[in-house]
Every structure is written in C-alpha cells, then in structure tokens.
Image 1 (cartoon, one colour):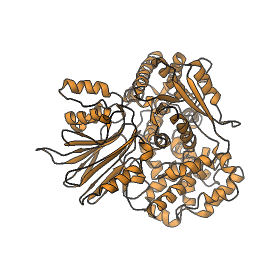
Image 2 (spheres, rainbow, N blue to C red):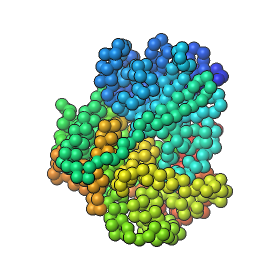
Image 3 (cartoon, rainbow, N blue to C red):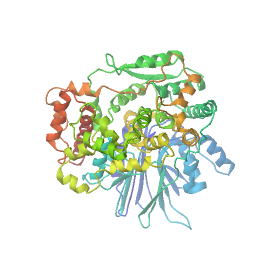
Image 4 (cartoon, rainbow, N blue to C red):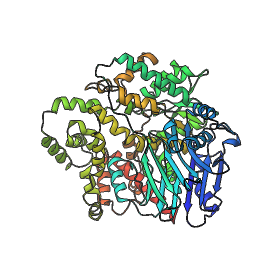
Length: 622
C-alpha cells in the first residue's frame, strides 16, 4: 500500500516540487520514497512506499522496465500476481525481483491496456509508456473494480496531475457546487466529483489514457457488474457452498504478505467470517483487533471476544472513551475532502492500535452489498407488502409533507424516505440533508447556481437503482456503486493509511462479486423478514452456534452523545469555517434541536467535517 503522485507539464518540471507533493503522502508510505523524471523533463512520477511484498530494493518505485520505456507508480496489491507471473514467464517475460508491481509492468508490456482485466486486487496506478513506432508517448491509468484505492487528477491546459489524495493535487480553492450538494445529501462526494473545481476522480473499474502529444484524456469502463440470471429455484445449500469456496480462496490469497498480518474484528457477521476463513488457512493463530465502548449500548465487543475465543486468535481490545471527540481533533489535519461517516473515528483508532502489531489487516467491507446485509432491505420489502397498494402520488405527498417538519423530529426521516415509494427508501431517506433540508440550509444564491439540479444526488442513485432485475438486486447494485466506493472504502483507506496500515477486503474479490450479483436470487439475499439469508447458511458451516448472526454490527460510536458532551459554544466553533453559502441560522437551529433531543447528530457531524476540510484547504494555500 502506498501513496502515488505524478505530473505532466508542457513546461519543465521542478523535481523539488515533485518531492514536496510526494511527501504530503508520507503517512501512506513511511518505508521508502522515490521519484523519476523523464529525459525531456516534462513527465515526473513519485512514490511513497509501504513495503508489504518484496521488501528488497527490487520493489522500489517508481519502477522502470525496458530501459525506461515503461515506468509505473502503483498503489495497492495484486493478489493473483504469482499466477500471472507464471503465465508471463511461460510467454518469455523475465523478472528482476518478486513484487506484484513488476508483474503489472510486464502484463502491460504483454497485453497493453487489457492487462487490467487480468488483475485480481485493489489498485490505482499510472504507467508512462514512451511509445514506439506505432504510437507516441502516453500515460495509462487504472483503478480497481470496487474502488478500494483512490485516484485524483486534474487536467488544465498543458498540465496534468494525479495523486492518491486531494492534498497533493495543486488546484484552485474554488469549491465545486455540485460536489457540495452531493456531500450534504449523501455524506460523501461520489463518482468523478471532488470537493474542488477542476479536480476529478477516476471512477472504479475505469481506465484512462493521456496522449502526451495532444494532452487529450480519454476514459473508459473496463468492467461492470454482471446481470443477475439466477434461477429462482436455485438450491441454497449449493449456492452457499460455492460462495464459501470463493470466499475462503479470497481470504487465502489476501493472507499473502512478507510482513505481519491481522484482522479487524467488530463481532458482526462479515468480520467473523473473515476470521473463520483465516483461521482455517493459517498455520498459526491469527491476530484480531477490536474497539470497546464501555457503558455504551453500541459496545458489542463481547461478540468479538466470543469469536476470538472460538478460533483461538491473538486478540487485542482497545477501549474508547464514551465522549471522546479528541479523536476528531486528531484526524482533522488529515481531512482534505469531507466524509460524514462518523465510524471514521473508531476506524482510525482501531487502525492505530492494529498498526502497532501488524502492517497488513483484513476487514469485512463489501459483505452487505454482496449478500443483502443492510436493514433497509427487509424493511423496504415489508413496507412494499403492506403499503404497495398505495398510488405513487400518495407516497410522494407523504414524503414532501414530512420534509416540512423540523430536522431531527422523530419519524421525519422515515416518512420522508417514502417519497419514491416503499422500495426506494435507500434513495430518499438520507440521514443527512434531504432535498427540503438542503433548500433550508443553502443560501438562495447557491441554490440558484445549482439551477434545476438540486435533486442530482437522488436522481443519480435512482438511475443506478433502475438497473436492477428485482427489488433486492436494485438496492444492492445501488449501494455497490455509491456508498461502498465513495463512503465505506474511502473511510477504510483514510483511516488505515493515516497509520501506514494496509487494509484488505476479501469480500471484494472479483470472482465472489460476480458470483453474488449473477447467481444468487433476491430471495436468498433478503425478504420481508430477514437479510443476508445465504450468508447465514455459510455461517452455520463456519461460525460458532452461540454467535448471534442476526445482528448488524460494525465499528460505530454514539455520535449524538459525544456532540452533546461538547462544552457550550465548542460545537458551533467547530463549524466556524463553513462556506458562506451555508446559512448560519439553520446551523444554530440544528444545534438547538440536538439539545432538545432531536436526532441531528449525523447532520452536525456532516457540517463539522465540511468545515474541517475547508479550514485545511485555506491553510494549505495561505
């Protein structure tokens, strides 16, 4: 796992500037640093390395092949690199070292852009190709299928720049209005958007090529979720056996490491299955790590201990203070793009704990999207069975009427979520700022600049929802293309890389993703009573019978109580750096509502993180 940076400029590049931008990513790669400048001085790559595979100097990056005709800077891990290497060697390719980075270079040398279709892993990389008689020099870039690794870029006339994090890409301080609109609605900035005008993200499962002669950038999708063609009468026991075999092989591949490795164990079903598979594949006890919240109803570290004892893991437990927003203060300097997911705080702390023992960890992200694990799914199906006879106009009127209620009033979100009908609650039921709340908190001028696109966040989710073959397929696809890559995987990347910890997600193996989306019927993911039905069949084979597999548990904190514990005036002070288009009277109304018992914690945390990102942006350009 690493931090990457690079630039192309029609003007000569200053190598000192390249190293400065690279070292803003030092936390992502504390073990080594490198940079490369093309002979003509107009292309530069840089790299901060976290050494995991091939710890020798042969793994140093940027890495060159064929006397510098090909150069790569790469962030991630390729789990099938050994089998790919064998295939390439049988085709006459030779290697100097043992890294997966060198395998990517050789794969591109052999197959060109199609090499990404052969990579099973998490990755974001840029590869300089000096060209040959048939083609001129270019940059080839790619990002993994699920979006585990980030890739920001900016193209401005004769200058192109890319990096693992926004802070390393030089751009204007102008905020992107539509990105902020999406953030307020969703709690994250999705897809190609970034907080800053002129900076974009390469979406998951996409490649790009920059022609260095014309500075033209072309992007394309190289992979997409398969259609669901599952037989309704599929044998669930057979499906569970196939899913388990794929999952266990995914875990086996992700146990490959030249450094110590452990597992983040929340005690929920996903992380418990990872521990079970790892314990089967490992010849020695695996290390597990969890967070405890003494005195909180959210503290379920006891479940993690049950799993740890059953599999005889080397278990580590860290207690978090019940009202410790000091964690937020510690994270604040690292926030260069806002993320409103408060589980970033415990993820950051458990990553810090884990890094003191290991360099690589496995986590349970992705299981909900593959197996239908969110509580929203059975709730939506049950509501459809009860209220599906109502006309669409009735749902719409109900949702719009609820939107007029004060933020945080009990039941408001529930009713507002029905605006598009019972099945679309995941689209209209935002815990942050729905359309009506955005109309309140955004200034009139800002709303005018958005034109008729205030509802763009919801409409984009709806477009993804409509691609499904059935209700559950629609919901899981929507989450796979939105909250998974743009919230949960961003959280995982930021929290872990802040401490130089590599985090791997076995549920996001390409083979398992394709199996679950193409071969598992809706009914074996969720029905009107329960979720993750097929995954629970796997649990019967892999987990202790005493474990409550019906729980939905991740690393989370009681953010409402933490915010209420803030000293008078401190909460408002945390939002002093909000942009001018955020109405301060509405912010204070949210704070008053919180004091009155309204559920405004998620909304206020959303604004705190936006203010933090804006403060960091201003200080970095001062």
